[in-house]
Amino acid sequence: MFIQTEATPNPNALIFIPGRDVMGSLPHKSYNKDNPVDDSPLAEILFNIDGIEDVFFGADFITISKRASVEWPVLKPPIISSLNDYLSEGNPVVINDAPKPACEKINSDIGIDKITKKIVELIDTKVRPAVAQDGGDIIFHSFKEGVVYLEMFGACSGCPSSTATLKIGIENMLKHYIPEVKRIEAI
Image (cartoon, rainbow, N blue to C red; front, side, top):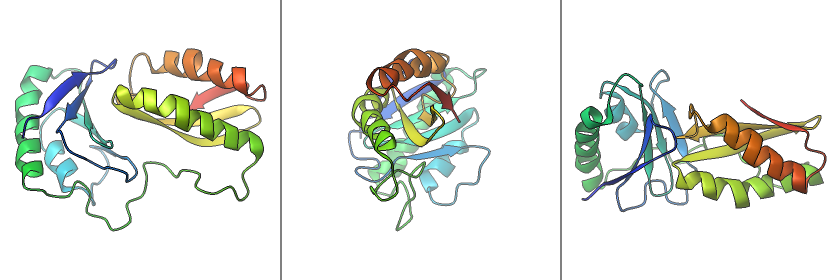
């Protein structure tokens, strides 16, 4: 298996592309080294490598974030070796019959107002595909009193340019299409 890497706007995050589905059409999953990992042996293996802080499984990529004090040339060989060993055996990335998304997504129109539907649609069609190219994800949480609450995963979480992405990019776009949006907050 040949695993490619791509840089992200976050210098502490790198995208690893194994050339096969990681989560496929299942919801993306995000893990942090400080939280228990009970449904992903691969995340657990990766957290055994000193310096890894976060692991994000996307459709066909894995974004790994590191401590700033550890350099990528030190981390890449054991990461690639671990990914090769685990994935080449055909092992599942997540061992859960009904994996939960990194955050609950609105799957139904029941009880959802028209403005919220439009916000979710814009985020899903315009924001998330662009953010996925940089190894991350942004999930809608809620819309209350003119404020859109979003959660960032993968390379977006902790990225130095994430505030600019939220305020300049996403906030301006949502305000343009939906005048009821006054600002965006990360949770």
